[in-house]
Image 1 (tube, rainbow, N blue to C red):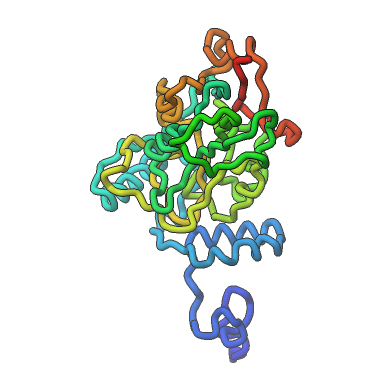
Image 2: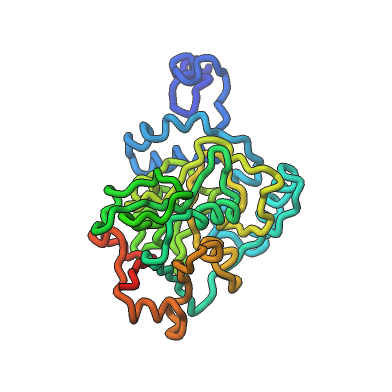
Length: 329
């Protein structure tokens, strides 16, 4: 005869009547793929702090299909598997926005390492780069998520803590200040990558650190690890008006993101890996931004790094950014 005490046990090993989370549920509680990965990360790390950090995210559950649940890591998928994933995401975009996207997976090129240089003598603080980035990368409009922060800085310091993002872009430039745009620095030694418990973010061979939004569990460890405040978290469902959707998309860049994941600048990889320039650079009214392949000795960015006095932000952090700043004098 079966012992009644062994009947109806839930996944935690307790009887349903003894388990607080299952008292009103005679069966097992279904979990989303994201919740499953969260629990796996907790078990793997043994970190009680991770449970505490993620407890507010219980409300971020999403309903997903079986195909999404069993989807393998981006780096493990075959071309055929990735094509199916892209087709599935494209169908979701069509259903939601009524727009057929040009969604593809754009791979890094051999012999390319991307570097950005920004001439602070020319930046006028207009923030046109900020809004061009939002438009290009399908960022939420309400609330608006911005990958680029432009700090109004007092002259004579590079300490970001002394700057402010709260200024009137219609009243720039101001004589006693200069303007410091900050975004993902695409570090050679990225602490965000080390902090991710499920390898949802990694660095590719062209130097761009990417995020797989399907794999991100929303723990925000990467956001906390970044010394440049460059990562953003979707607390709500991103709001993108249909008429403002950019249909030119790539899997690892600007496809629409779900609620509860982290996102950031990716050097517009859907553009740059196909020979175009980042949207922020094209929008800059003063020519302050320079982008290119540091492995090409004839590139403009190579010239800047050889001939100008360049510096990086927070050198003491040891992140080795691929984003450089310089002044004309």
